[in-house]
Amino acid sequence: SASWTVLLAGADRGLVDGVRILNPLRAANTDGIDPDCCRNLTIRNCTIETGDDGVVVKTTPARAAKYGPSENIWVSNCVVKSTSSALKVGTETAADIRNVHFSHCRTCDSSHALAVYARDGGTVENVTFDDIVGTARRFTDAPRHRLGFKWWGSGEGIFVTAANRRGKTGEACGKIRNVSFRNCDLTCESSATVVGRTNSVIENVEIENCRLHFVRQGSA
Image (cartoon, rainbow, N blue to C red; front, top):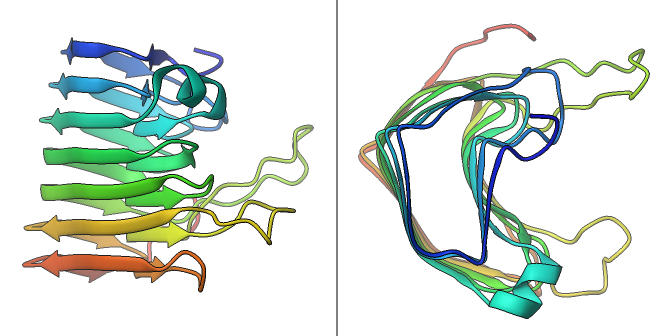
């Protein structure tokens, strides 16, 4: 796909099962599966290789105004290789996102293995990552490419951030609370990072029984 591959917009009671996606690893905006303002959705047994986020739950502004929050989403038994975030909530958070559960998945060579973002004012809460294994690594930028590609992340195994978009420093970017990482085993180049702001405090992040193996892998 030249853009988001499987976009689910305002879906309710949906199932994505056994989908295989193979996108170029150096093509931005080629997300794998994007539930946008969805409810009661299951994603399982999928294999994804892509140059942007692998499975990412979001609430974009236009769809948030029409459909409301994303909630009650289960992602399991997926294998994701991504030049950006493998398993992610956000970046778009124009409405709330809650009750999202990732389990029994594998990440492969992603800029962020597991990520939660708040940028657009909504509250992200009750997110769990359980029994995730895999790797995260740094990717080099490509400034001489005609599009001047830059790649996100530094090979973090866990990345949680509430921060303003560029040019919107005076606005609340949203809140993140009740996020747990349990029984995860990740080989990565950087640490577990949790960054909030004074007007967007991150609350109740739990990292339990997780192992991060720091290995310098070199830029890809």
